[in-house]
Length: 406
Image (cartoon, rainbow, N blue to C red; front, side, top):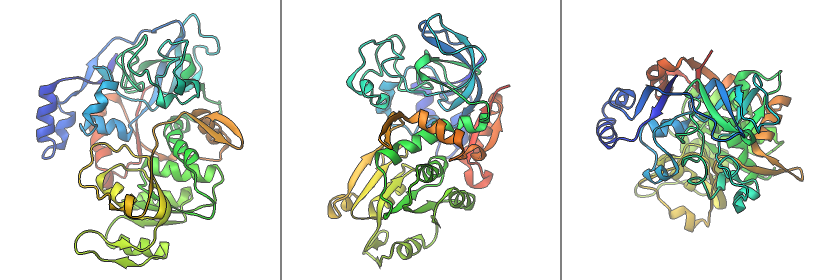
């Protein structure tokens, strides 16, 4: 089968990293670490695993970070090369291991990609996995499969940027018949937004600032409303089409990140603007809670300076090695800074529930509708056009792009 794989090659990495600022298309050229290759279908690592026939494989911001060589090299210890990209997924069960009990070939499913202790064959889970916090597993480099935090970064599992990948039965969730494949694909990004919202929730009287109206920012706004939050939500969006979607999903106000957006935010937050000798404006007040759904130097700088004194900032976007961050606001305003990674288990209405289970329930019940965020579909062999489309959001109007398999 054909698969889009990331290969470990210092010459390819060095060359494309050196020229990428001038020729972005080099990152998906024949010279890149990303290669469309003929590979065998992944085998089942144990009788408890299943093989999935991919219907949709989503193109996530974290995938783009890998392709554009923007991920921290430190995370390479939690991957095994060559790996097939793609962790956002939906598909059908194609084959099952002898020990699989609750799944049958033909079942329509979505897979939680995290490769924790159970998937790695451990019968004595680490403390994090005992709590259901698979995103904090201490054994991502151990066990019966090669290193990798997720499907899509492990050479043994494959990924959803291929017609088939494999998953442990504990990772697999059946999709209800009435839920479309498009809604099912959105379970993973929705779960990634539910996790920070439920781990670090706003109070109903508070003002929330959501920085970024890409897929995760939009899913986070939807998550706030789906769990019944009545907090005031302000979204900071880059593009007009993102602003429209943010409003439709429940934002009370949207500010475009252009021109005098500081002035608009100050008005919405009831703050005055102060002008320093150099640098962006300082607000005398800010948001109670800020979710940074971008993870860039600019978005984190905004998150810190736009939070009120004693406020909270949650890093949801994939922040890596970020230069030139002004950390003044963390100590001057005594901010609390948290990070949120993927999904695990959540506390809601007095119950403990897996984030994926909750995401699937909310989408199935209609309390959140996100399938319309899939705006572009591509065949796998169109990957160069797909990646160019995703990189050029302002021109293409893409929200979520996927690889579609028949």
